[in-house]
Length: 166
Image (cartoon, rainbow, N blue to C red):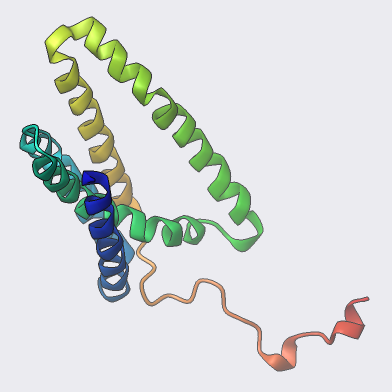
């Protein structure tokens, strides 16, 4: 139930962040999302007190900031590469990051619990916060594309007729 409540809020948050990114740019939204998630990671964890409502509240707090990242990432990635390299430029780094960081997260969390005992969840949280900070720094280095035509379209006069391309 907490997940349903949080995900309904997540849908609204994604739409709001997307609209805001059209006004202020994608880079500021990525920075707010990354830094906000890093700052709120431990407070959101501490909010969980055993009730469905505290869990839903903690999830909503984090999804507010994760929503910023989710709203603009699909637009940012293609803007990083020229059209001729876009598919490989997006697919390879994204897949590697998901495999390395997402694919190992459960194992790291279990390992941290085994290695550090009761401090395991805190150590894993520090790892997650570190990754969020690295992501925010990376977002800071991105070129802002707000208001820039990334791929000018050809005018009707310059496009070859279909019969000329055969």
